[in-house]
Image (cartoon, rainbow, N blue to C red; front, side):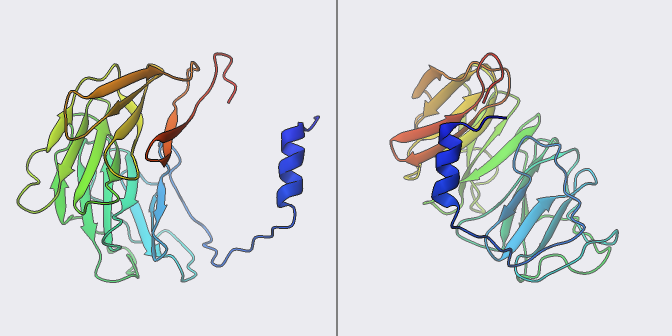
Length: 246
């Protein structure tokens, strides 16, 4: 195989860097069937979608640990776990969502996670009936505590305020979607949400105004696309062309 010039340049630029893992976790049994990351860490705790359906392992990020069949798990969903993510404001608050359309929230007493063999966590601290169909991810707002967004194959994006008096209904439901979103991200200032749609398009909208959408075509390949903000005005998208090249 012939190396491209860009690959060679990158290799030269970073050849002086060395990496050594600080902690290794043997016998991890993660579930890689989801299109989302399937793992999240805030530096203190790690949450990971586990191999048995509808389960999540939660463990300390700094203490070495070997996993076996007795690993304690979150078992509060039905169907495949689609996303796990930690709150940016409370580092013991975990959000999960799954094929059952629900978003659930779990508060841990300490930074050890689940440690007692076979003592599974069944009851969450808060449950949202987020969507009637598969809920694909939960995205926390980085600047406003208790605010988050979810999206689903039901072709909606919803914004929620999970303050105890406001969690019964979505604050805003965005329905003007050409197809369901495969990836959504808040802008760093929290004033916009970008979503990549299954029909090879992107939507941008102000979550304070249900109808304020901007739509654009994106990558033309058949596979799912992803989006990330680099600053409040700039986006990076990733996808494939018609020949399925990245």
